[in-house]
Image 1: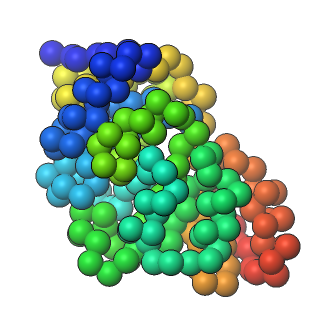
Image 2: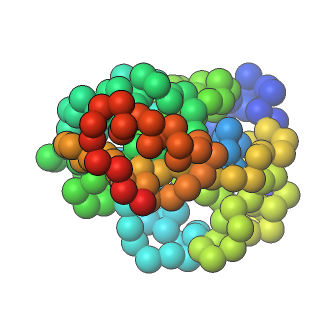
Length: 209
C-alpha cells in the first residue's frame, strides 16, 4: 500500500517528522530533486535506504534544517563556515571531515551536508531533530525522481510515506570537498562552479575538478 500526503498540509509536515523520528523512511521534495531518507543516526534506517536504492554501502549526504547543525557532525573548518554563509540555504553540498565518534551509519571519515532552500522541507527536518538522509529518490543507475509518481514507480509500497510537493527541478546539488587549504568539485550541479572558482581565487586557495 502506498501512503501519500501533500506538503501544503501542516498535518503532512507533522506526520513526516514523526515518521523520521520513529525510524521510518520517506520520499520528500527538495529544491533540487526528490529525496529518499530517514534518520541518519539509525543504522537500520541507513541499511534500509541502501537496500531500496540497490547500491553498495557508502556514506549518504545529510540535509540539515539549519546551518548551526553542521558542526555537530563536521570538524570545525573556517572555509566551511564561509561557504555556509555564502551559499546556504541553497544548491551546495559540502563534504568535509566528520567528527570523531559520529555513528558508523554516516560512513567513513568525511560526510556531505547541505541546508536546502525549501522552507517546508526544513520544517520537516527541524521537527525530526535537524538531520535527514539526503540521497536522491532513485534506484542506482536510474534518473533521480522529479515527481512523486516517478518515485512510486521506483519504490512502490516499500517506503512509509511519500510527501508530494509537485514537480522538482530535476538537477542535483553541486558537491565539493573542503580541505584545510583547498576545494575540489566532486559533482557539478545547480550551483555553477564559477562561483566556487571565484571563492577560491579571492582567498588564494587551490581549486580542483
